Figure 1 (cartoon, rainbow, N blue to C red):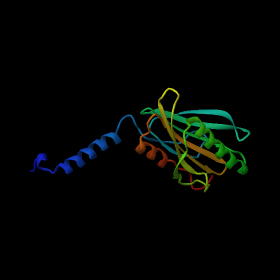
Figure 2: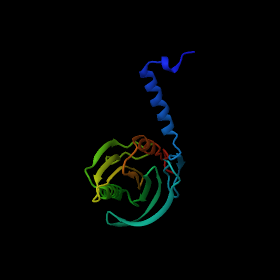
Figure 3: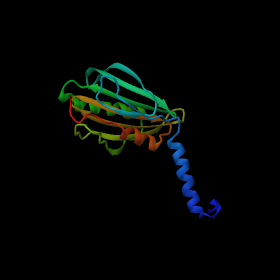
Length: 184
């Protein structure tokens, strides 16, 4: 049997990275679970147990009900909201308004991370994953990524916000979004 010391340094380094990466992925701070928010068709992977809220909001000049599910894990807030625009011609204005509010809340330039493919979503040119980063007045940083997508008259926004985002956790969160392939 070979001693670990007989292994090339590169192999030891690669094994160390693999083991450490595995430990981080299994971190108890991120306890991934599949969640289907109340009154929603979307399913999401959350790293914590979300609370659910309903708010009346004015979006694109219309008062609508926003369903919000959110939780905090590893100093990041994970949130999924959806709004029923009510009419097909309101979907794009609601989607545009949500994107604008997200950008204003974080500040900084908007970076398009790419299209946000969600199984079951309706094709829409604004269905994208966006990112922002800025410095607050107190000197601390804030970063956010959000995915916007639609199905029927439902408009969805999935967001992760924190001082420093974990790229792997963000990818897991956004990749876990699913809608039924056919509306009921």
